Amino acid sequence: MQDFTILVVPGAYATSVAVTQNMLQATAALAPRLKLPQPRWRVVSPDGGPVPLSGGLVIETVRMPMRASADASTWIVPGLGVESPLDMVSRFSNQACVKAASSLRRHVEGGGPVAASCSGVFLLQTAGLLQGRRATTSWWLASELRRLQPDCEVDADRMVVSDGLVTTAGAAFAHSDLMLHLLRARCSPGLADAVGKVLLIDGRQAQSRFVVPSMLANGNELIGRLTQFIESALPNPPTIGELADAFAMSHRTLSRHVHAATGQGPLALIQAVRLNRARLLIENSRMSVEQVAGEVGYGDATALRRLVRQATGVNPSAFRSGATWR
Image 1: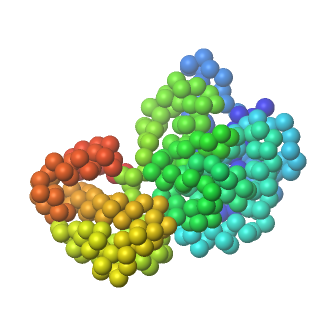
Image 2: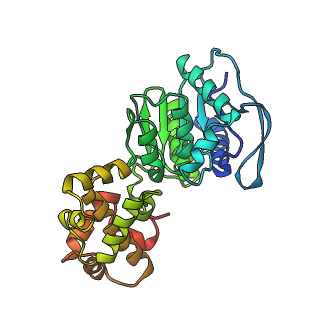
Image 3: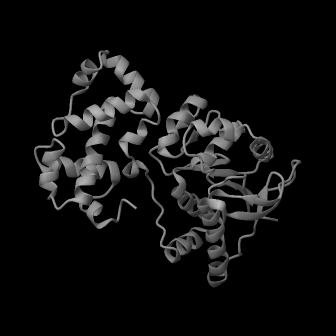
């Protein structure tokens, strides 16, 4: 019996597929040293045979089970390589994804666990598996997931969210975090830790440190304009009231629009813009933290350090070393 089933659809993100296999291969190599069973897995696709991935790569697969069976393996959906929310409609309406979604739904109905990262989470949504659940996805796709599945609690700050039989992860390279989580749950914490150390992967908990505010707009004209307005105002960021006045709307209307698009309020958007500007200055200049604080509208470095620690869990100096923003 398999421990994991890697479900690949045409055009899947090659890196996510490779990360899945490479981490499982590393686990299989390390398991005997820790006197633990080696994991077993298979790679399937809706139709079987060679499947094209992003970047012109191809992977060999077997045809996925077409009927419900006694399958206790964890089905893993790597990222699908979409470039914008507009790609979702055409991608998930094709026959391969329709078949994949049906198989995922049957697997969960039979008590089997599933997991997905980044845009792969939308295949779980297509399968009807996110209703009434908590989930995460790539932070720049979170608003689209909220729109498609209003009854799903989308926690875009989290790198990995597990809710019953469904586990989801954030942006494409969060797939490694997802795999560590699954290895810890399916195999053993010690084995997962060993894999993380050998491959130099540390299980991260939050996506917030990786957010670029302009990408939060995600095609939303208002959010894009708000972000530009805040950026142009620095080092004197507008208050929420000033922001609302500048765009001729009430405080409540502004909050409703921003929350609908980003899942957060106007204050969080303002802070995200300031934090991103601070990050760029620390990474790309020789300014001291005190000077950077002044450039983003803080009277002293203490307030900036506090904001950075709250948002990322590290001090601003970590930005300069490259340890945080990878």
